[in-house]
Length: 404
Image (cartoon, rainbow, N blue to C red; front, side, top):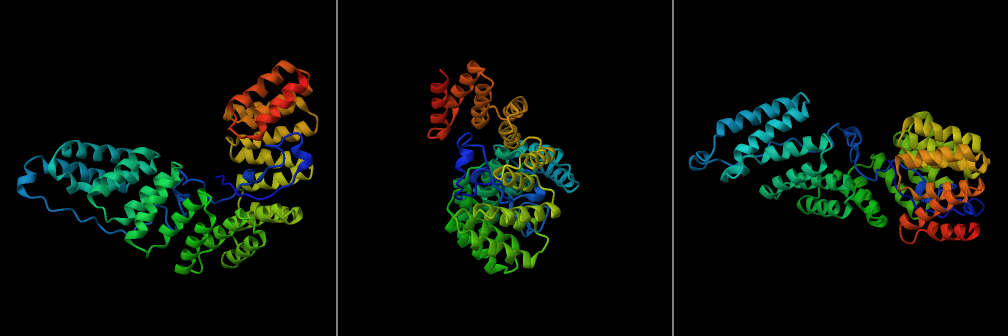
């Protein structure tokens, strides 16, 4: 997954042509710190010590006692039958079938007073919705459970994970705050809140929370590494590299730390070191982000053939990486192989038609091919659809003036 890591990269020679997509600018460097919680459950959140994304001490939810007066409002045995069947299917990982049985139980309960007697149903179904990727339904069910059990700090934490995955970082932060107000003894909640702070570019607060995690467990190499990522974002590259080395002393096979040392070295203009670190990361884990990052070093140094090789490997591992397609096009553009460049820029737009850097680059390709009408068409697309304040807008206007 991608995460913005801001640094100062002075690439004047390359920026002259492709400001937004030439040598990857700081927001193009890829790090393993998740920008959002992955749909891949094994990598969710902190990837914390379990295949279940919700690090929860398994304590059964205490069900309120149902009085005979309330029980007569609905068929309790039928509810229990569907609920038990849902639990059975959940245990054998038939999640969608389990959800359907929980829904049957809820339909019987709907509109009846003792609905809170089965709050555990909503908690369990929320987790299954999360695992099956239905985040909005997961958020709703966590909220329903919280309405009945407002002191369940884990439910706040879990709902925060869902909001985080939906990239609603402020809402996630509020839930993590609520969880921490209820307990300050769970390191994973501080970890999750640190990720939310990072996503909101509140780096010092993220560092504070990562430090709390490290206080709980001084050997938590992930927290040490991601604390370093925060320092990279703040431009303190030496401090970041030092923290990555500390993480590697605990786990010498932690590829993320090598990748982050590569990022910090790249921002420090230590390209040889960056190549070395990215290569080590790749040796440990064929992660597409690592290939992307090493390619950008080759790109900056105009080693286009090597850059293309790494970007192609990025695409083999992640066929939807439109940035990698765009960067390959840029390499071919610089080699004056405009037809190949056009092909890759169009491929980037096939994946993300709103990706205006590829539109701008296509404009430049068609300008060089003297297909001026097409060039103007793509430059106008940039002007119409780029984010306000994007420097590409003014550049596109200048290019239109130059060829009109």
